[in-house]
Length: 260
Image (cartoon, rainbow, N blue to C red; front, side, top):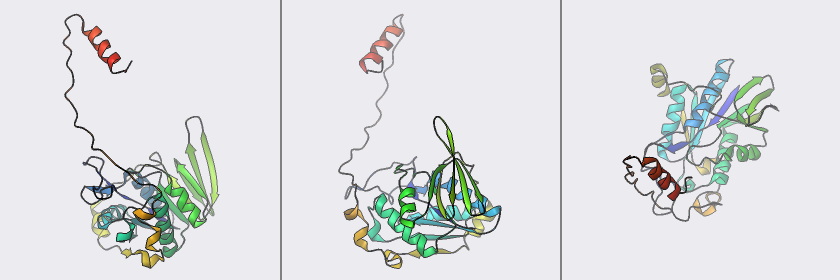
């Protein structure tokens, strides 16, 4: 079974994330970045499927030079090869354009038996790219999988909701997005880290995919950030000294802040 896993390089949530002053796009170069945590579950699930049978896992990303770090982590986990689509024209692309580039890259790789994604990226958290990608590829989509089973020519998932769980079956090839409840991603072993250095990583530009630059980028985006303001520094808290009326003072404070 051949599986393509779409992964994303995102700003580290622990770093000082911000936007570029020039065009209000997310700064992905001047901050620390990493493989989106939610995509690690997708990589792990693909590896488990292949390890239970035969096949290979290809990881695919779209992003700047630094996005190679996301691919490196996936290769260290055990993925067999990687594809990095990078082109200056992609800068500022929204979900619509991103799904287009991913779809054309998947087609160039060769439509796999399964395309797996995380349920969302940890920077955009929109959860729309998997559905857009499935539509462009003409594949059935089964999303938000908490459990995944491949049996012959079908894939079965369990989707857990607030009130009930659903079992959904789709024919292969298909696209599946997985949640952070589906598995526990492995840590790269020393052997895996060393082996990743020899695994193939292909770099493609838009021209390699037959995508015109006018279809991507900030000018083609359906959504844009008009303005942003940095979060103000946290102020020192108010200390209430209890002299027999601490409860009343606390109630007054909560009431003034409209917390109660």
